[in-house]
Amino acid sequence: MRTIDTKELKSLLGDDIYLLDVRGPDETAQGIIDGAKRLPLHLIPLNMDKLPKGQTLYIYCRSGNRSGQACAYLDQHGFDTVNVAGGIMQWVAQGDGLVAETGTTLAQG
Figure 1 (cartoon, rainbow, N blue to C red):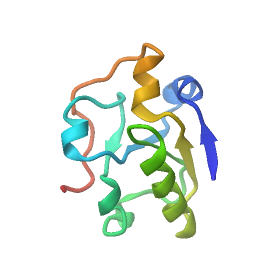
Figure 2 (figure 1 turned 120 degrees about the horizontal axis):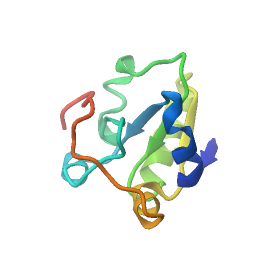
Figure 3 (figure 1 turned 90 degrees about the vertical axis):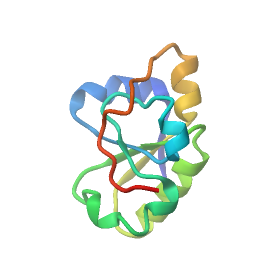
């Protein structure tokens, strides 16, 4: 599984990447990284058809644990994934902000 840190993620955001937040609705209600789509980890198996197979998926969660699980699962199903180590906690700790939930929700929990 490929992994990047949140500083690397920040440098990629202007490149129109596919950013996926796999936290639950209670967590994403507190804010997301601008441009992220939301799909809670437990709903990934039922919604893989909504994810692009021809594009790298950059996946984050709170700390990097659930996003690592999502990457491992999706990699087994032919997706190209990158885990964002440190997740939203590291993103905020490095001084980057969050936006209100205005992105795309791929499935409801």
